[in-house]
Length: 596
Image 1 (cartoon, rainbow, N blue to C red):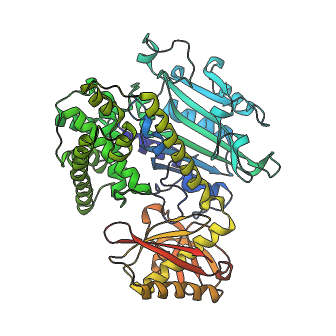
Image 2: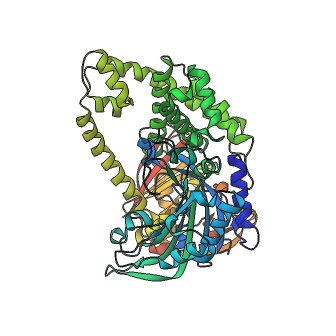
Image 3: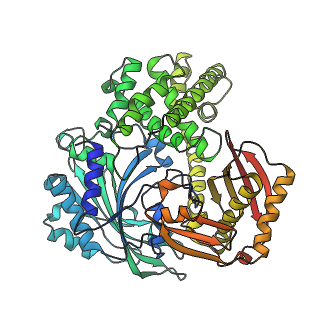
């Protein structure tokens, strides 16, 4: 079975009777309009408002999709047989509709009847209880009723079988939702009988014998101000299953890079380097994953930079370049674009699955992808040379952080000079850097709109006013390309090819503040996307929307398709000031504003 066939089979299964789920499109990798993190890292993330109780624009309570995801915390893990930064998450959701019995029965039937996975190779996990929450006896009994033997059912604590954005029940802040989850693991035949792997391990062991392929989360609790957990009146199901991992299970192949979603990329790397994957698995896996992630990011308009998403993209590209250089001993600027065209784009372009459009269906977009890869490669090849020249002046961590040198390359270069690299010191510096990155990432996720706080709601509504004001002052070519909101300020990205003059900035600021003084009422209507567009509602993120959308009107000044929280009246916002502007790439500008 191919990855594309698996995706379609899953969507068909949950959208057909009696399950009757609505297929919704994948949200962009880079969250648009209501960002709370650098990337969408799960299918659940764009649906948090509806899991919290807000009605979905479609009016449906059963949803299914395949979500493009990118997880930066897994960058250092890439190189083994199962971790990637980019992946697709097969997901289905119940918004206060069905619960544990239906969910577990359906996913078990999908895995064993639709995908024909041998039942004896499947193991399940259940929440053992703790932190004030009882053992999940319901889930245990459901799995037993489905015929799963007790020696294939494992109980784990909150660290393994509890989901919330913040972690365990004790780590959840007041107001956050979460609940126990139940995972399904697949046991690989060739690994089970390989003496180098653990013979008495368990599903959550990291030896490689088992692979998690599915996880049903039962969102049934909300943290109270006194620290207790209260059962929700709307109990939700949030299911996630990795497309690539599920495909590996179908093939009984523990290496996801041997599936058809990676093999064309690996083949191109082998052709360019004249080496075999079997002899250089780690490096080729890193190149294949990082380049795939980079291509999808560039396709969404991300450009290499030293900030935010652009920094991640640059890191992915540069690590791919260094690994290619390490394998081949030489490097040409077009190596990455060759792999991207023949490996990544050809894999996804020719066999995309409805309701998704072709991932790379525009020749112009493909040219942009190749141009970014070639330009970044050309620049980094020069940087690579500089790093080599400063090998004796910079520490290994500086070489890693500034020039993108993997530590193993620095270690090899040191050995050639008869020097020994202090790995303990390097790892200590790296851990400190990673801790800072994780803290920052967690802060971005929690500090944005998903907390639905009063201040972020004000800032989000202000972005609508800012968007329309820019269009009135600069012209209708202005369109939002991204935004980021914290408790301190809003950041707004838009299309425009030159800096705004002081006069233009003042005009935009005055226009926004005038609408705030006018005390305009904010109203919401649910309608079809086509109807919204016929009413001239701004809707620039078509990939994100379903058939039914919410249209927010701010008096007669602004009308925009959106799913985020809004104030009831512009007077609730308070005056704003625009305090900074900058360029974020060719033809795009960024403004910063705060409430004063």
